[in-house]
Image: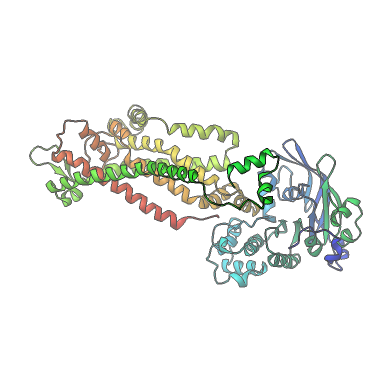
Length: 279
Length: 331
């Protein structure tokens, strides 16, 4: 799959039609307000604010090292796991600040699931991979039914229904990533964060994941970090463009409906980036 | 391309690679250098010889054990040895060589040691790998490994002069706990092998990729859930391996047992609060006494020794099977 090729992206990859009006009407589910992230003395993300509407796909794009993944990982407090990482500012999820003292990150992560860049299924059977998160979340229902429903939603059921007892790591990379999506769906989250979910995959697997995202959008809110601008243009309703300021801090340049951002960028830096003139 | 060509190219200020690429006149040379071949072969032989030393030692040990054991079984029947329940090698006219009490003595101490070292070692490993802040860990781990360097005779002293009087006799009662007893020796052996279990288990837990942990956390797992349901299963083969090494050490441990557990063979089912004799302790006892070479008693040492050898061998084989069955390979 071509990644970040030169040339105007909006010509090569038409954006989805008739979405912007729809999404601007829906209420925001996640609101990032003046987010600042430090790794030790390094100020990685500076003053980022944007809204994520419910049941939409928001793409975070921008050059390497501009803090996209850091922002994403702040939303479900995964940055707590990194020593010396400090997150300031507000991230409102259903109007509740996830960084508030009384908020338990475990509760946040049960509602805000995450899919990683490198597929990371557990070294367990496909079935156990799906049931793992459900079980720790106190799932008491029909396990077989949950496994089938999650795998169907992740468009993986037909490929694995006869080998549910096999190790998840025996699957191909694309199947592993869909398994990771399936196990995230199985805990029935509200929001799904995806950190470059297709960057390690071949073009066909990538398209499958993108199709899947469009399916999932009806039920979930998706925020995706991607290096691939065509991907952002293809799947997302809203695009947030990050870049580095003169102090090498990750800053938000522009957040717009995807069709608008790729056709009429408001900022020169956005235009330079999407037309491949970023240097 | 040989060395002189590189030197020439370097002297001419040209990169050797471009020099060969450009030199059409010189035939392209891929033939091997004779001196390098010879030195490679010598190094290979030297390395092989080092490996051979340990192989030959093993063969030597096994053959010594085997020949003397065969001699022993000419005087004492195999059945009497392995099925006999009384070990009375000193009885003048009619000695009894039933090895079972020695085996159960060894097993008693090993089981006590494992009951101490496996849970505590594993929990320490989980703490060190998953919970401890990096500064705490950087102090604790070396201290733990230092503990493994304490001579075992010191642990024996510790068992005899501290665990028995201050712990066991104080808790259970002076009249019920012998001055020499299996429990104190077992506890000391357990403490001795604990660092090994903890350190090796921790190594294999830390080797579990971070991405697996993040996968668990991202689904709303707590630290305990990630530790016990992601990291522990993924590290299981390494953890098992540490248990096996620990059991082998416990079975083969001598000094602590000699010092703290006594030297009188116990019943088939020993009372851990009283003294007993383990296989290793018997071997030491006889060797340090005045046994004449070639006598049946002398040969009995080798029979006991080869039994010990077989036990640890069996343990290793069984455990390797177990590891192969239960391992969760993460890559």
